[in-house]
Length: 481
Image 1 (spheres, helix red, strand yellow):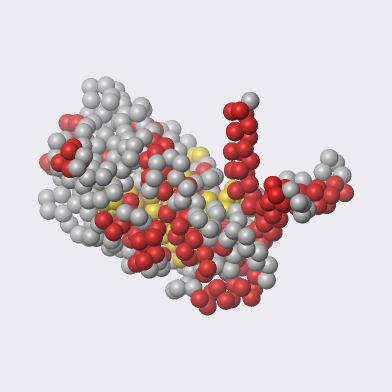
Image 2: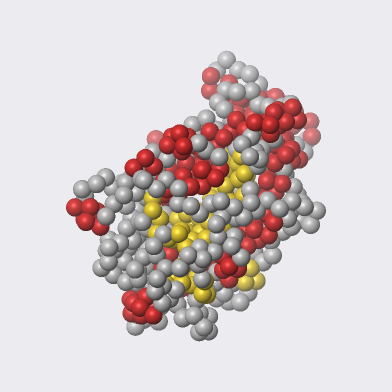
């Protein structure tokens, strides 16, 4: 019985959070939208900007996503990732049928050449055009850490390394599972004053995400239909139209019972938010934000819908309504699962990365002409994942690692470049903590702080959002204009 009660309570709180998407706790919801939106726009630093976090749940294999292809590196790659089993995870070389896609970064790295996974065709196009970049070997760190320090445990290390749930939380919220606040949500806290309605500052198109949890501004959760309405308040209830108003009166009525009173407050805010967001969002389709095309499954050749692209369409529809909502700063969260490729990695990752590439390219196209406006300089998408994976293969997959490579996409990105010294390909080098798992070169704090600086946070605010950033000399990795 106890377990059932706790589960019900958690579900109630989760749904309450989704329905309420409360702005500043206890603050009245803004109804005079035009007046407040005008005031917010006048105070906003530098016009509209949005950050979009694309989280790859399960831990994307970075070593088959961005690869070094110079002769020495490729020889090491093949020797380690080619197995005698049918499930070998080594990819074909540049120029071979289905081979990796060469990229040439603006900043060369002596003796190195690079490529992307064969199914990142659209992302390669964005890289080549200067609207995408790679940050190499980033992951959770408390302070700069050498391999010797890691082995000796002579510096503070991130807790619970190699654990999916904990590292997902560390990436999003700098603490293991159970963290209360994420760095996207904390940025939302500090920038919400620029928005007419703080409730629309931090928005998830992919369920509850600790990344968007703030201290004062809660995340607002949407689905592909947009704002999530409370059932039974429109149309008919038990077959009668007369039932909807009494239901609304019951669930929004003031009450002396504190629990019921708070529930009514949450419900009222949800109703108000839904009534504002629904007409403000652009519609899905030719009259608003065009629907994404289907992607091609590389394993079957069949066309299929891409749920990630639909999430990004929802984000684009909300961004299209930014003026009506009085929004100047917004943080979004989208995600995809399935990246825990202990088995069948080559086929599984091929399909996953094809979806990633297709969805990002679709979003870039939408931002390039969103209802007649090019917003690519004002919207930046970045990837994140639990951790990287081992360089060694377990036969037809890989195991849990640490550092990994990630993409940053947008017009404000200093693109066509790889940031950081690309790790040595192979084993037993200065960044190998075992089985080719990478000791990160850059911390998530440095990665996030670079984005936060572009987003408009001051140095003091960045210190507040990223608790470990003061441990690092390089606070800005330079990949944003």
